[in-house]
Image (cartoon, rainbow, N blue to C red; front, side, top):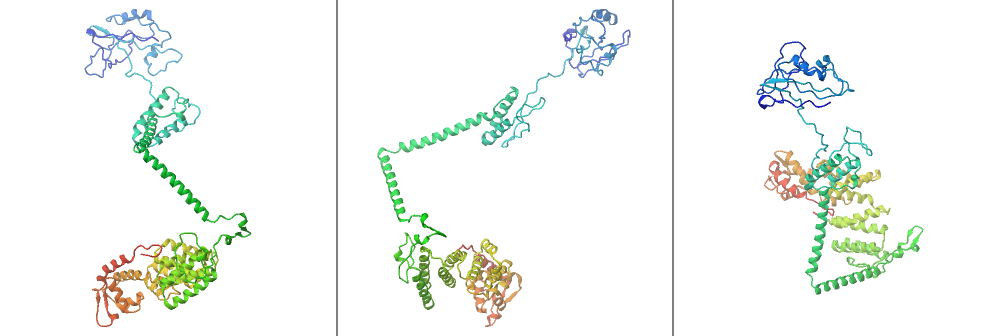
Length: 566
């Protein structure tokens, strides 16, 4: 249907306010009743009489006559444009706002309204209060530092109309771009990705674009810039090193490099000649490799030999065979019982251990050498040498060689308690068998561990007074610090004083004099009340002794390394 005629204007060419909406109440033909006044939303607008409404059933050719009959005081309106279609009846025009119009007919034209004001005639144009535009498709702004959250969709074919969905390749493109982007380019990347995706949706190519090959300009620029920097840096360094080097210096460096290569090749050849060839297929017997073919067998007859650390392949003329080593062991034992010279004995034992190692001798005699050396080291308090012997004995016992495994297992537990190595203690406990736990040595060591972990110093020192074999030498290394800790507990528990005799009995001292000497060594001199000549009746002020004992405890509990050296 054609558009309505242009809006007329008021007298003196004043336009009718666009928001002045007249009430379209159709008149009853032949009635002279007046219309209600026009309502307006603008207080400054001009109020005009209500406009007449021309019924749409009047044919166009009869419109001037009908208008002159019913509104003689108004000039005739211009003829309406010719339209096609059937218009609603008069009754339908009263309820046109509620009665739906048939979709098979063209829409009816808007009612023609006229009003008189200031000597003129006006026909307002009814136009929408907005301008319809097509909505622009955009993507949501991603959060900085995060990969944008994409809607799920089924991939290959475009989705149905009315729902914006993304191809899987587009999602992968956006995620890849944000994962590769450095922090300083996040804001640039967000803008460029948004423009790329929005342009693809507007051009309707989002489902035909190969997003796997798509790139973002800011990322490509940064990659190219970084590559240029690396290339220029390497080139500048090469140019700098070459430019600062004169021809003579270059020749000297080349000669020095060739000399180093020649010396290295000669050294490799010398080493290869000194090392015996690896065993071949002919070296194998039914039970494995014949190690005797590749093992050094010494022929030295010297019983006493000074220990020297090997710096080259061992010389068989300086290595003692097994029968000579047995005689050397008996000689060293006799000299130890006679002279008690630990430096000499330790040096001879280390020499015997070296000869056993280079000859790959692992039998009962090897166990005897290591066990004897370990016991003597414990007696002299050399925990470093003891630890080395203990390590080798553990490997020999694992081979099934006879010896005293439970005795040295107990020593091992006590050594780890001294070193405060809880991990090693737990490892030993997990490997204990029921037969091991029944052994008196192992049972005693486990009792010491339980007393230490529970803080039962009374039981600990009862076990210290009754140690099997040579375990007391190991306990001597940590019993002093445990006494200090026990004294700290006593200082907090007993008031006001405590007899020296009680401390002697509880902490396993031999006599009262030794107890007083220990207390004085820990800084408790002024707190001892010396009454009479009997030291057992002397009393210790416990409250005043707390601070010196705490200081002594801090000094005693230092970190201990695996060799037992503080």
